[in-house]
Image 1 (tube, rainbow, N blue to C red):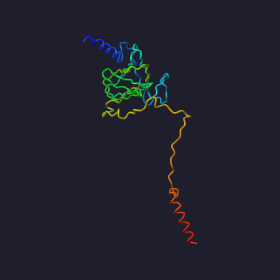
Image 2 (cartoon, rainbow, N blue to C red):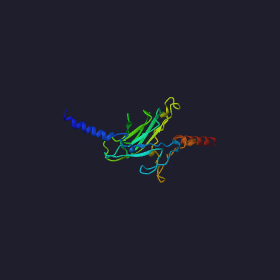
Image 3 (cartoon, helix red, strand yellow):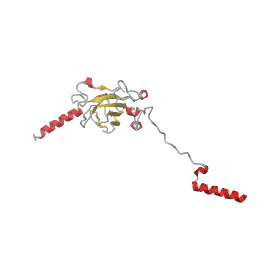
Image 4 (cartoon, rainbow, N blue to C red):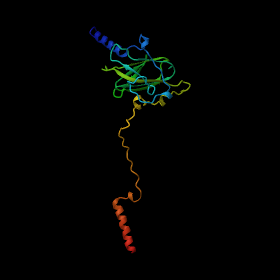
Length: 217
Protein backbone atom coordinates (compact mmCIF):
# COMPACT_ATOMS: atom_id res chain seq x y z
CA UNK A 1 0.00 0.00 0.00
CA UNK A 2 2.69 2.51 1.03
CA UNK A 3 5.00 1.56 -1.86
CA UNK A 4 2.39 2.70 -4.37
CA UNK A 5 2.12 6.17 -2.84
CA UNK A 6 5.19 7.65 -4.63
CA UNK A 7 3.91 6.26 -7.93
CA UNK A 8 0.53 7.90 -7.40
CA UNK A 9 2.18 11.19 -6.51
CA UNK A 10 4.34 11.09 -9.65
CA UNK A 11 1.30 10.27 -11.77
CA UNK A 12 -0.65 13.15 -10.27
CA UNK A 13 2.29 15.50 -10.82
CA UNK A 14 2.58 14.44 -14.46
CA UNK A 15 -1.13 14.90 -15.08
CA UNK A 16 -1.12 18.32 -13.47
CA UNK A 17 1.66 19.40 -15.84
CA UNK A 18 -0.14 17.91 -18.85
CA UNK A 19 -3.63 19.21 -18.20
CA UNK A 20 -2.83 22.29 -16.12
CA UNK A 21 -5.77 24.43 -15.10
CA UNK A 22 -8.01 26.19 -17.59
CA UNK A 23 -9.05 28.79 -16.72
CA UNK A 24 -6.00 29.41 -14.51
CA UNK A 25 -6.09 31.31 -11.24
CA UNK A 26 -4.44 34.23 -13.02
CA UNK A 27 -7.17 35.20 -15.51
CA UNK A 28 -4.80 37.60 -17.25
CA UNK A 29 -3.23 34.52 -18.87
CA UNK A 30 -6.49 33.55 -20.57
CA UNK A 31 -6.58 34.24 -24.32
CA UNK A 32 -9.81 35.98 -25.32
CA UNK A 33 -10.53 34.56 -28.75
CA UNK A 34 -11.46 37.11 -31.41
CA UNK A 35 -13.19 35.58 -34.42
CA UNK A 36 -12.84 37.00 -37.93
CA UNK A 37 -15.88 36.93 -40.25
CA UNK A 38 -15.38 34.33 -42.95
CA UNK A 39 -15.89 36.84 -45.77
CA UNK A 40 -12.92 38.80 -44.40
CA UNK A 41 -10.43 35.92 -44.24
CA UNK A 42 -6.88 36.62 -45.36
CA UNK A 43 -6.18 34.02 -48.04
CA UNK A 44 -2.46 34.72 -48.38
CA UNK A 45 0.09 32.28 -47.03
CA UNK A 46 1.81 33.29 -43.79
CA UNK A 47 4.59 31.64 -41.84
CA UNK A 48 3.73 30.85 -38.25
CA UNK A 49 6.64 33.08 -37.22
CA UNK A 50 5.10 36.10 -38.97
CA UNK A 51 3.53 38.67 -36.67
CA UNK A 52 0.04 40.14 -36.95
CA UNK A 53 -1.26 37.62 -39.50
CA UNK A 54 -4.50 35.62 -39.38
CA UNK A 55 -4.57 33.38 -42.49
CA UNK A 56 -8.07 31.94 -43.02
CA UNK A 57 -8.99 33.42 -39.65
CA UNK A 58 -6.51 31.24 -37.72
CA UNK A 59 -4.78 32.63 -34.67
CA UNK A 60 -1.57 31.18 -33.21
CA UNK A 61 -0.18 30.11 -29.87
CA UNK A 62 2.71 28.13 -28.40
CA UNK A 63 2.70 25.16 -26.07
CA UNK A 64 5.92 25.28 -24.04
CA UNK A 65 7.80 22.27 -22.76
CA UNK A 66 8.75 24.32 -19.70
CA UNK A 67 6.51 22.95 -16.96
CA UNK A 68 6.33 26.36 -15.32
CA UNK A 69 4.46 27.77 -18.32
CA UNK A 70 0.68 27.46 -18.38
CA UNK A 71 -0.95 25.51 -21.19
CA UNK A 72 -2.60 27.85 -23.72
CA UNK A 73 -6.13 28.52 -22.45
CA UNK A 74 -8.55 30.13 -24.91
CA UNK A 75 -11.90 31.60 -23.90
CA UNK A 76 -14.87 31.30 -26.28
CA UNK A 77 -18.11 33.19 -25.62
CA UNK A 78 -21.54 33.16 -27.28
CA UNK A 79 -21.52 29.40 -27.94
CA UNK A 80 -24.81 28.52 -26.23
CA UNK A 81 -26.98 26.16 -28.34
CA UNK A 82 -24.54 26.45 -31.21
CA UNK A 83 -22.22 24.02 -32.84
CA UNK A 84 -18.55 24.80 -32.51
CA UNK A 85 -15.86 24.02 -35.06
CA UNK A 86 -12.31 23.60 -33.73
CA UNK A 87 -9.31 23.33 -36.05
CA UNK A 88 -5.59 23.50 -35.43
CA UNK A 89 -2.32 22.73 -37.18
CA UNK A 90 1.08 22.35 -35.48
CA UNK A 91 4.60 23.38 -36.56
CA UNK A 92 6.49 21.16 -36.61
CA UNK A 93 4.03 18.27 -36.87
CA UNK A 94 3.28 16.95 -33.40
CA UNK A 95 0.57 15.38 -31.30
CA UNK A 96 -1.36 18.23 -29.70
CA UNK A 97 -4.57 17.79 -27.72
CA UNK A 98 -7.46 20.05 -26.77
CA UNK A 99 -9.90 19.86 -23.87
CA UNK A 100 -12.82 21.89 -22.61
CA UNK A 101 -13.75 22.16 -18.94
CA UNK A 102 -15.88 19.02 -19.15
CA UNK A 103 -14.92 17.25 -22.36
CA UNK A 104 -11.86 15.73 -23.96
CA UNK A 105 -12.20 16.90 -27.53
CA UNK A 106 -9.28 15.05 -29.12
CA UNK A 107 -5.70 15.13 -30.38
CA UNK A 108 -3.99 15.74 -33.69
CA UNK A 109 -2.19 13.05 -35.63
CA UNK A 110 1.52 13.27 -34.84
CA UNK A 111 2.41 12.81 -38.50
CA UNK A 112 0.39 15.71 -39.88
CA UNK A 113 -0.22 17.87 -36.80
CA UNK A 114 -3.69 18.80 -38.07
CA UNK A 115 -6.95 18.40 -36.17
CA UNK A 116 -10.64 18.96 -36.90
CA UNK A 117 -13.72 18.65 -34.71
CA UNK A 118 -17.25 20.00 -34.92
CA UNK A 119 -19.87 19.39 -32.25
CA UNK A 120 -22.62 20.99 -30.20
CA UNK A 121 -21.16 23.32 -27.57
CA UNK A 122 -21.70 22.18 -24.00
CA UNK A 123 -21.86 25.72 -22.56
CA UNK A 124 -22.29 29.29 -23.64
CA UNK A 125 -18.77 30.08 -22.45
CA UNK A 126 -16.02 27.56 -23.14
CA UNK A 127 -12.36 27.37 -22.23
CA UNK A 128 -10.17 25.41 -24.62
CA UNK A 129 -6.93 24.05 -23.19
CA UNK A 130 -4.19 22.98 -25.60
CA UNK A 131 -1.50 20.59 -24.39
CA UNK A 132 0.87 17.80 -25.40
CA UNK A 133 0.49 14.48 -23.64
CA UNK A 134 3.45 12.49 -24.98
CA UNK A 135 6.44 14.33 -23.55
CA UNK A 136 7.44 16.49 -26.51
CA UNK A 137 11.04 17.67 -26.20
CA UNK A 138 10.50 20.99 -27.95
CA UNK A 139 8.02 23.86 -27.92
CA UNK A 140 5.07 23.34 -30.25
CA UNK A 141 3.77 26.29 -32.26
CA UNK A 142 0.31 25.95 -33.71
CA UNK A 143 -2.38 27.73 -35.68
CA UNK A 144 -5.90 27.38 -34.29
CA UNK A 145 -9.36 28.56 -35.27
CA UNK A 146 -12.78 28.43 -33.63
CA UNK A 147 -15.98 29.07 -35.58
CA UNK A 148 -19.43 29.18 -34.03
CA UNK A 149 -22.29 27.69 -36.01
CA UNK A 150 -25.72 29.11 -36.71
CA UNK A 151 -28.38 29.59 -34.08
CA UNK A 152 -30.95 26.75 -33.77
CA UNK A 153 -33.57 28.85 -35.58
CA UNK A 154 -31.27 29.04 -38.63
CA UNK A 155 -30.07 25.43 -38.39
CA UNK A 156 -33.08 23.47 -37.09
CA UNK A 157 -31.81 20.11 -38.37
CA UNK A 158 -28.29 20.59 -37.02
CA UNK A 159 -26.52 20.04 -40.34
CA UNK A 160 -24.18 23.01 -40.08
CA UNK A 161 -21.11 20.87 -39.36
CA UNK A 162 -21.79 18.66 -42.38
CA UNK A 163 -21.36 21.56 -44.77
CA UNK A 164 -18.04 22.81 -43.42
CA UNK A 165 -14.73 22.65 -45.31
CA UNK A 166 -12.45 20.42 -43.23
CA UNK A 167 -9.34 20.80 -45.40
CA UNK A 168 -8.62 24.54 -45.28
CA UNK A 169 -5.58 25.07 -43.07
CA UNK A 170 -2.91 27.79 -43.26
CA UNK A 171 -0.53 25.32 -44.92
CA UNK A 172 -3.03 24.84 -47.76
CA UNK A 173 -2.40 28.45 -48.81
CA UNK A 174 1.23 27.74 -49.68
CA UNK A 175 1.86 28.10 -53.41
CA UNK A 176 4.55 26.57 -55.58
CA UNK A 177 7.41 28.98 -56.46
CA UNK A 178 7.15 30.64 -59.86
CA UNK A 179 10.26 28.81 -61.13
CA UNK A 180 8.98 25.38 -60.06
CA UNK A 181 9.24 23.03 -63.08
CA UNK A 182 5.85 21.91 -64.27
CA UNK A 183 5.33 19.37 -67.02
CA UNK A 184 1.66 19.18 -67.95
CA UNK A 185 0.43 15.70 -68.81
CA UNK A 186 0.35 14.99 -72.54
CA UNK A 187 -2.92 13.82 -74.04
CA UNK A 188 -3.01 11.73 -77.17
CA UNK A 189 -5.19 13.17 -79.89
CA UNK A 190 -7.84 10.77 -81.19
CA UNK A 191 -6.76 8.81 -84.27
CA UNK A 192 -8.75 9.50 -87.42
CA UNK A 193 -8.84 8.12 -90.91
CA UNK A 194 -6.07 5.87 -92.09
CA UNK A 195 -3.86 6.73 -89.08
CA UNK A 196 -6.12 4.54 -86.97
CA UNK A 197 -5.42 1.50 -89.10
CA UNK A 198 -2.70 -0.95 -88.13
CA UNK A 199 0.33 -0.97 -90.43
CA UNK A 200 -0.40 -4.39 -91.88
CA UNK A 201 -3.99 -3.44 -92.74
CA UNK A 202 -2.81 -0.21 -94.37
CA UNK A 203 -0.39 -2.15 -96.59
CA UNK A 204 -3.20 -4.53 -97.55
CA UNK A 205 -5.50 -1.68 -98.54
CA UNK A 206 -2.80 0.00 -100.62
CA UNK A 207 -2.01 -3.28 -102.33
CA UNK A 208 -5.67 -3.69 -103.21
CA UNK A 209 -5.82 -0.24 -104.72
CA UNK A 210 -2.75 -0.94 -106.84
CA UNK A 211 -4.29 -4.23 -108.02
CA UNK A 212 -7.56 -2.58 -109.00
CA UNK A 213 -5.71 0.16 -110.85
CA UNK A 214 -3.63 -2.38 -112.77
CA UNK A 215 -6.70 -4.45 -113.69
CA UNK A 216 -8.48 -1.37 -114.92
CA UNK A 217 -5.59 -0.62 -117.27
